[in-house]
Image (cartoon, rainbow, N blue to C red; front, side, top):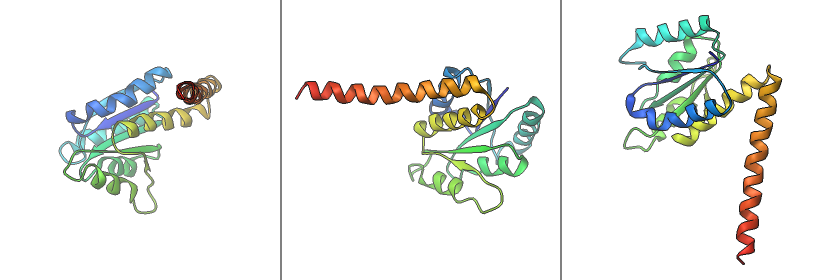
Amino acid sequence: MDVLILTGSKNDLGDIDGAVQTLKKFGISYELHISSAHRTLKRTVELVESAEKKGVKVIIAAAGMSAHLPGVIAAMTILPVIGVPLNASALNGLDSLMSIVQMPGGIPVATTAIGKSGCINAALLAVSILALSDAALTEKLKRYRKEIEDSVIQADEEINKEI
């Protein structure tokens, strides 16, 4: 398994699907678990410790509100941890963003955008990390980037035909 995805609540699965689908697109093996830094700390520790034994190379941790999950995970491992803030409160995810992005120096957590876009980008960042040691994955990532570039150019051409 290459990537472990952890999220603190079943309510987060709609956003997390963006990461899951992106990893599938690249043929990246993953596990997805619901585990909370507050409500199921022992389980979270077990999942992180077993991930290292399973050969996980990157962890994606999505969390809302106070968003402790990514930082707690990062404190337990030297694996890269990508934190995704989720919109789970009246503050529209800003509380989550600040909790993850403002980690004190020493134990880093990479941070993406709030919500589904952040989940997709977390998966793409994981792909980039994995591609450092996988030439075939590097080529897939280059093709993906070319596809999104081409789609923007095509959209531009389409709107200019209408003018």
